[in-house]
Length: 188
Image (cartoon, rainbow, N blue to C red; front, side):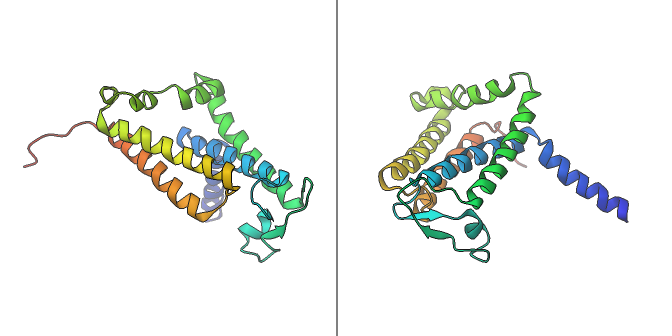
């Protein structure tokens, strides 16, 4: 029984330290987002009047308050350092997984911008109407989040997340649906 528990624990640990390419994509994306939010928070640009405490947010204020009044200068607290450390660690694991691939880490970052989705913004012939709608929906989702964050300092506003995530998720779903092979006409 204890060896089975040890195998499960080592399996979970190896899934984190040596992720698959899909998991590595999530690690890199979420870590980049977290690092950007942490830097904005430290510089006082994440919210107009509050400094977020990551420990308070993730513990639902069991450890400390989630929102502290913002000071006029750069404000670094222990939870910022811990949050940046966790994000950096997961970024390292994600990038390590891509370092072993053919294109490497540079291939991952190039693939974000040079792929077959973005040309569909200008032409339906690039993947059909689904891929065109997917590209526009994804672009609108990211653009809305960045626009609202810059103009209103609302980088962690639930309403902005609701709109952005709906558009981005719809774009990802349509993009994957556009790649599904056609089935047989007769289902009998």
